[in-house]
Length: 119
Length: 109
Image (cartoon, rainbow over all chains, first blue to last red):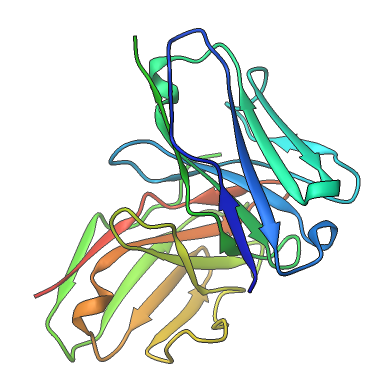
């Protein structure tokens, strides 16, 4: 079946980096754009940006430039989110979400990856 | 890009209907027929319930419906059931970006 499976929870110290993976199955990976969405504890959803899975070109939302990097490995149908120089307020669940038909809607979501930043 | 405006909470009794509003601007909701709605149960990933303003993905109950007027989109849930209790988020395309609403907590009394 069509699904996105993300990597497991991470506990990191401030200043460290983290790389979250999102592995797709059940569909042609390069046909659909991939988005990243953040949800801080007890807060709402926040769109971080997207990556064109055909070209690898990323687009970042305001507030997610500089320390955030989207990348792909199409050979293993996986998208990645890397966050560097982690801060406490990066603590959140990070979701990958497929775009139904860019731009359209996010029809398939990963299960989420909890990233905790704490000393 | 400012978040879309949703009521923080709504409630209804089983069998009743409720409507959740989502107010944006002429740069997002008002300009595109690309409003979607997501249901999120505690500890779970969001689930697409409505896309392109009023379309339902396969498998979503026809008790869920969406509409739009001007800069405001709405999600209506009819025949409320206990399992509808969740957080609901609207989302709109804003021309090269997406913006979510702040979320609405639905309580089924």
